[in-house]
Image (cartoon, rainbow, N blue to C red; front, side, top):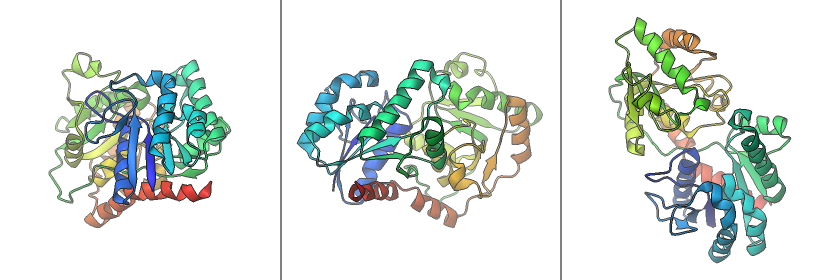
Length: 347
């Protein structure tokens, strides 16, 4: 099968969950023996992907390049086209140029009104537009499925859990960090609540170690702001191999975004032996809720979270080699790609 993935990639300047998803899915199709390419506005650091232009352009300007994408689709002649984010908006033009493909749109979540009135309206408009014109619409968790159905009256066709790239080596390392957060440093991720809770807990237990890694809007809080000279060890932006190493050195991964659809970071953390700490409203509950290494923390502020982390700080449950193998097999992008291929015969 010939597959074309439309969406962002990962390089020195660009990152994020959707880019990781696109490149992981690319490798999943490769493992299945399919011919696959990613078409993006930028150049990946690790794969030789197709580009719309010879220079990077803002994702916001992608609407001016749907014609160029349509021409590349016609030239490539794919059997399956998988698109994410703004890339889906050109679907009508893509189909006019090449109708012999199954077009699948992936909704990676549901926007919160906190992103701003216009952006909230625009993202939901794109989601409904993709449902109207694409052959199939996929989302990444049953939480995302339910929210799309209830909030914007959009019925997705299928739930396909994301895969994971950072596979464990099974060799258990010394876990020197008690708690870690890795991800985008943004208000939506409740980064300040997590960091404030770390500091409160450290006041009672000064031997505990905490690490935060990532970049984004709140990065200055760690480089020059209120967390600069605290107990929090700030790692900044990490490579994929560095992320894997930090997970292998940490006991608990903490993520407090209450409406996280299904971040790839959860499976990355678990397959590398971390226990998971998150609110019971995240999409990860669909897979991990009955695991002894999954801890819910339905907290509204830093004081509550610090108290919850105190309760579980000595409850780290090592993940067995058998369980890791099971997780790695399930969270493979090969499995993910296989599920997307099955949509081709369901038009």
